[in-house]
Image 1 (cartoon, rainbow over the protein chains, first blue to last red):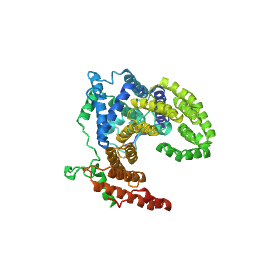
Image 2 (cartoon, rainbow over the protein chains, first blue to last red):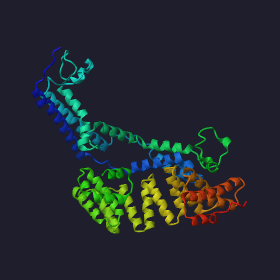
Image 3 (cartoon, each protein chain N blue to C red):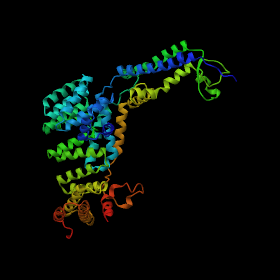
Length: 263
Length: 276
């Protein structure tokens, strides 16, 4: 089969411009998102909630290292009938509607901004490129590829007999968009805004962090704390109490163990 | 430069080293592109610890102010400079102004507490720290600071409470156990003494060569014995603990090659093991 011969002008006027355009658009995106990025404002309620819940969780997890009186005092502080902190919060937030991140205007705004920065330039440049450079192949990858790669590498060209190694301008653009990440981190430092995967990850995390229903959270913590009882880790316990689980981790025999280690 | 970067990552407080590096390689620091600002901040905070480092401090602050004229972070550094010079009122003014803009900023709230401590106004520092902990109740470093303040003012009951919080946050740190046991010991009472003994033992289990915990264990077990321990308590174990801790202490001093006069003194300080 005869090989295609590409005009060298294609290299000078198509491949390199696409590369430069993509790179510059990425740079602009970085600076624009830096400009409009808003620092998340801490909300006093949310802050206190997370801190409170974290403290209660720690008490449940590590409470056995405290003396019984100290543990019970804290438990009372959290869940006593009359004025336990969790008891009150649980009642207060009982009927709160689940907080939907979509309804939170600032959240929404952030997401819209992020999307706009990511997708508007992409669409614009894509249409520009398909308008200016469509209808021909511009490079050839130096290895043979199966036919399945054709729709990926030859977007905009419907030639069934063309070898799959040839790449069209549109596909080259897309490859550049996703492949320039390393170059950006070289130019802009590692914490750049161009990296879409990290941006998406952050968004997901923000969503996960946004508690859906504060009342539920309080209720769950309240219940968990209520059933947790104090079992002092440093109490001497006779060995037949042991249920065979994690005997080594049992701190009850700390004094005896210490003596044994001194022998 | 590599060392600066390393120290920045590990948050080590080797101020002397940092300032020395900065003095030697000032031009390299200034020529390090965008990384420069982080270095400057690091060098500035390090130079606060050092006497005779005003020149470095001034240079850092000037460069930072020129680049970030309205930055909160630079403002904070400036105020920290005032603190280091003992101009507490000036620092407080800056902090208060910044808090008006952002009343929940934990770093600024903590700086204010640090000002109170610097002024030696412990009661005020305690109140401020308590307020801070109402907001950030799981900041265990703040609990630790509060513990120190309470111990300074001999308020052992509150100190114990704070220490319990610290222990909750990290139940595998022997220092917390040891301090907690000391507080229990200092408060006295037979039940607390037993608890203190156990916590000393726990601390020793985590760090077998802690002389501080060994002394504590020795004293606490001696005390629980003389206090007329309850029948349920295993007298033999306690005696073993007392004697064992003494032996361990002697061995530890031997091993560390302590001053011979100290070693000779040691047995007379510790409670004898011949009795009972």
